[in-house]
Every structure is written in C-alpha cells, then in structure tokens.
Image 1 (cartoon, rainbow, N blue to C red):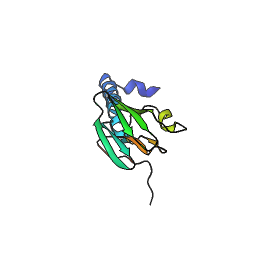
Image 2: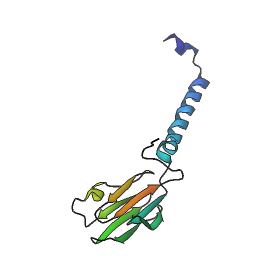
Image 3: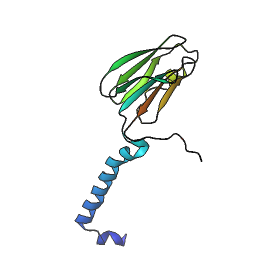
Image 4: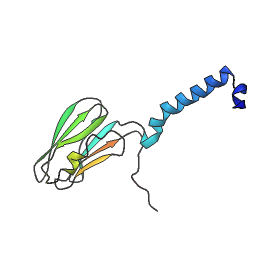
Length: 124
C-alpha cells in the first residue's frame, strides 16, 4: 500500500469524476441508449407508434380478438391478449431499446426503440 502515499487530493477528485462520468454514460451506450418510442405491429404492418412520454392504453385488433397494450413514461407492456399461452403478457414491462413482446397467435407485437438501432443478434 505504498502507492497511497503518492495519491494527492486532486487525484482522488479526478478518479471520482471519472467514476461519475462512467456511471452517467453507461446507460446511454449500453443497449442503444434510452427508450423513446413504442412501435405496435399487427400482422407485420405498423399499427401505431407512440412516444414513451405519456400514459395511454391501446386496443389492437387481431384474428383472435383484442390485444390491450399499456404505454407509460419510458416503458410499455401487453396487458391482455386472447392467445392461449399468454407469453407476451408474461414478458412484462419493456423498457430498453430492442426489447419486444410478440403475441404470435394474435399476430401483434410491441417493440421499444431508441435513438440508435440495436440488434438482437448479428450474423454473417
């Protein structure tokens, strides 16, 4: 621990500032930044796009019935779906860019996007 004798108060300030800077920029750089929009698709076509700034409920018609989507500030989720297994409802809140809930039997999906495009996987 001899090296601690060489660390001055200004050095501690620089290290603390660097740690704060990394902590603030990490969410923006990880997974494409912050969630900004929810894109709702029905049968592969865009049904609606919403900013994630206010609360609203959206009823999306599908071949099996109505899928209910809830949008809140910075997140969205499928609240109810007529599908038999309820996988998209169990997905819960989607809050990061690139996250998606797919209600396959009813052909409805909800996707979260940000400023930059994220990829689930890359292939070549």
